[in-house]
Image 1 (cartoon, rainbow, N blue to C red):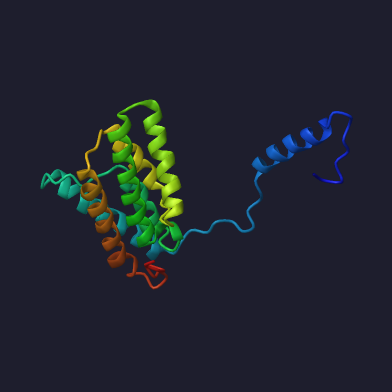
Image 2: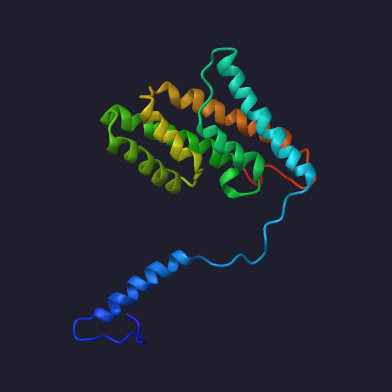
Amino acid sequence: MSTETALDAGGNEDARSGVAAYFLKMKGEKRVAPLAAPPALDLFVSWLGAFAGISVVAMLTLVYKMPMLVPSFGASAVLIYGVPEVPLAQPRNVIGGHVVSAATGVVVYALCGLTWWSAAMATALAIALMLVTKTAHPPGGATALGAVLIKASPQYILAPVALGAVILVAVGLLVNNLSPHRRYPRYWL
């Protein structure tokens, strides 16, 4: 409790200042520096990577009838090809985050079926498990949610999810390193 906060007989001032502090957190801060557009070569490499990565999984799905396309891969493409230097875009996070989340969604669906709360449980549990396993990858939340919504079987974990994530990372390895400004991955583990 702060010594600067004056308390009335019922402690109401402290409660009011706590509520005010809570809402002040939502104010945010001013950006220190404006966001700069990346060099033209990096924009092209981002476009090329996203096009190539999603093309491979889409082609396997639509042409060769191998189910490899998961909507959350679109968000993974933003991270892998758009901001490949961030920790959430590294191979461990992409592959591990998707696999942990897919497994979570499959297990939650198998145990609970499709309900409003099983969808929420799969997503929330996937987040917790990704954090514990140090594989946080935001699109993983959608992978877990998707597993419940499509009533996924255990096969979903391997293909499309694990294999698709490996394909996206492999394309990232090939394409991101075309730019002299990029190095992908920053780390593996």
